[in-house]
Structure formats: structure tokens, C-alpha cells
Image (tube, one colour):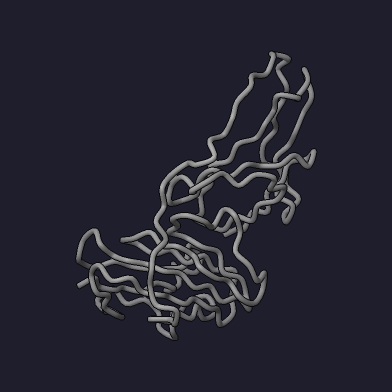
Length: 217
């Protein structure tokens, strides 16, 4: 249920190379703070070659003022390394410029005004077709929307923080949505037809019914 605002105690930068969908297209360096929502994942590199014997650096959550992890220098010599300029080949999805579907996360228990029902299918999605989905909040944020069955590409965030972040590149399956924010993404289901769910990844919210069944046909 916590959004982590991650930073190193000495201000050293992270290099982000991957997220919940796999490797990014290219590394994103020089990042000193990372905001990570429930269910999101990251692969980061940190250069500790200058860390002296006994010197300590702490990974912190700036929001909670928690120390999460401590690194202590061993005194062993560091080694030279280089991060490839290209990590993976990611073809941008080509899809509609206006939303195909809109989802409002309302309060702590509803999507588009509905609480989850096990035997109800809320919408159908055509197999193999790129759609543009828009997510917004009706209060109760933060929400991290998570979609089963396909990864997606985040294309815009308006309102609130008002921009996309380096760790939101490439393929994603979970994205943080704060109050007053609208996030749009492109998605294509081309693996299997059948029933799937989307939901808020904050456990309290999905337990209260912030989930939706949909069918890929």
C-alpha cells in the first residue's frame, strides 16, 4: 500500500535498465530519485567503485523517511564496466490517437462506478488490435493500474505530475496513477483469447472490489 520515493543517501544516481516488462530500449542514467508504485518493478545499476572500506550508503524512501537498505564498502578494488547503449529492440505500438476506452478508478472500490463481480464481464477486446486506453481517478489515489494478459506502452500523463518518467519506458504491466492525473497507454492482446482482469494493485483497493473482468475475443 506504499509508494516508494527511492534515493541514495549520498545523492548518487541510478541507471535504470529494466522495468516490469523487461529491459528498456536503452539505459536511463543520472536519475537521483525514483517513484515506484505498488506492483511496479525495476532493474537499476549503481556504481559503488568509489565506496571506501567501511563507508556506508543507504537506500532511502524519502516519503516515509525510512532507511531501506545499507551498502558498506568492502575495500576491495572496483572494476571497470560499461552499459550497452542499446539494451533491447522495442517496436513502438501504432494505434489510435483518441481513447478507445476510458477507465475511472473511483474512491477505493470501483472502476467506472462498478465494484467487482466474479460472474460479470465488463467489456470485450478484439484480439490483435491496438487500442488506446485512458485511466483517470475519481479520488482515493494513489492507484496502480495493472492489466493481465498483455504488456502495454505508456504514451502520456497529464495533470498531477504531468509527465512520463524514464522507468515508464518500454513494456509495462503496472503504472502509478495519482489524483488529478490522466494516463494513456497503447495495448494489444495477441497472446491468447479468453478472460482476464485489470485492477488496482493497492491490496486494500482490490480487496474492496476495484477490479474488472474483460474478455479478449
